[in-house]
Length: 181
Image (cartoon, rainbow, N blue to C red; front, top):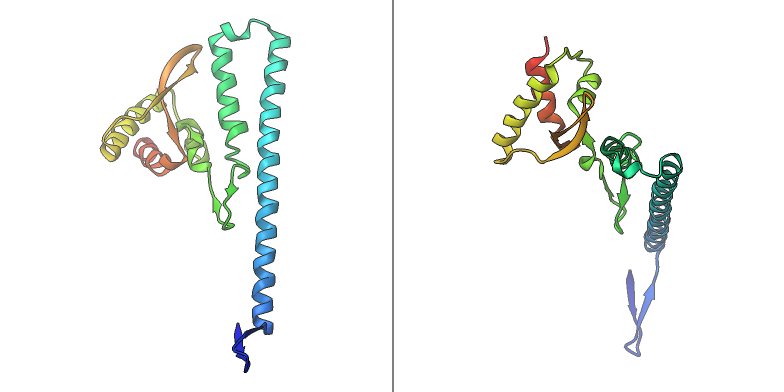
């Protein structure tokens, strides 16, 4: 911005074409940020709506569904991975006021079977357990502690299994490669 000093000592603001263009770009950036915030708000409202509708549908089908541990675990998994994170669609991204995209997908849960499939690695019976034990050791070596666990239905029984996220993908791929033939 240029300034012109008059005899009176006042400063007059002169907006040249570059300054006007910069202001237009800043205004557009602010409008884009407002639009992203609106989209993120709508996405959050949609997620809440889906959770409520699913809960209602399950209750209609089986009013005592909360006493079925397998059903509760499956419902939690679907909500956590499919609805709340949107890891596969990238819709779990949100923006900050600066317009920078912050990926939430690093928090999305992943499994050995899922990553092996994406790597085109066919797992034999029992491979997941071997890979899981190796992965747990790699995780402890890297982080100084074993991974957290969650309850999951495995071969018809509810078991504690290690929890891994997209942030652990590289480590998981290393463990899978160590056991792939």
